Amino acid sequence: METAAPQISPTSAALPADWRDFFTLTKPRVMTLVIFTAICGVLAAPGSIHPVLGFTAILAISMGAGGSAALNHWWEADLDKGMKRTMNRPIPGGRMRREDARDFGVFLSAVSVCLMGVAIGWLAAGLLLGAIIYYAVIYTMWLKPRTPQNIVIGGGAGAFPPLIGWVAVTGEITAMPVLLFAIIFFWTPPHFWALALFVQSDYAKVGIPMLPVVAGEKVTRRQIMIYTLLLTPIAIAPWAIGGTGWIYGSVAVVLSALFILLAVPVGSRMKAEGDKMLPEKRLFKYSIVYLFVLFAALVADRVAAYQGWMA
Image (cartoon, rainbow, N blue to C red; front, side, top):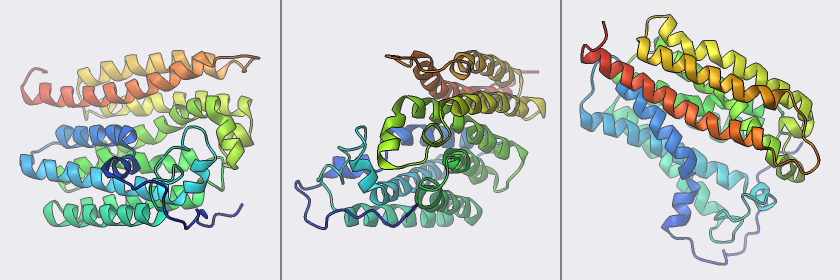
């Protein structure tokens, strides 16, 4: 499958881009999760960081994520034009030139890495650069149009924020931030494939080889179940290795058990005529809640330990 840059018409945009269009390029809904997990990484890390430097680290991570998202918009503009849920984005909607999105993405990415390096440290900056390249190049340009395992391998891009946040505080990579990375990495396939099951026609129309399109519904449902089961011990592992206390551990156990309960009907059924895909939609929505609450519990556990509320 060809992966050349999308051939958007070079003619001027029908409408002038404004700040809302540039903001849209950063994928603000996805950014919410990026910022939240990065903040949790900063707050849960042992040691302390000056509030100004902590804010700077989060700002740099946010800018890097926004820059890579803008590059994703630039590269996939033709594909976005062919899908119902993305056809009104700034470039396919005719409100922005493709080159403007590219330049905006490069600018945000470069500034974010430099800011992180100068203010925080070059290990954190190197990880941030790796996350940007991972999403904008490895996932968007290489994996997504070539393999149905794009989400599995590409899940690493979204797993970087808590790792970078932790390293910004401690200056080193240890088992705990690696586990936080792994949680998001293994959470991504069941989260995204649940969505892909009820929007697979969009991907099929533009030729993106998402797993439901290439391997079929049955294989996708089985993979959702497998990755959900793999996620459970990884989510509990921070507690098992003594990196957290019982607050995080109990929340991880309960949340993971609910995740499995919601994944079972998705993994054991097939779509019927006129199916509203309610189990899949429930799993997709719950997966978002799962990650937010799990990382919030990580911070709560850290605060409780710092205050001496846990033995």
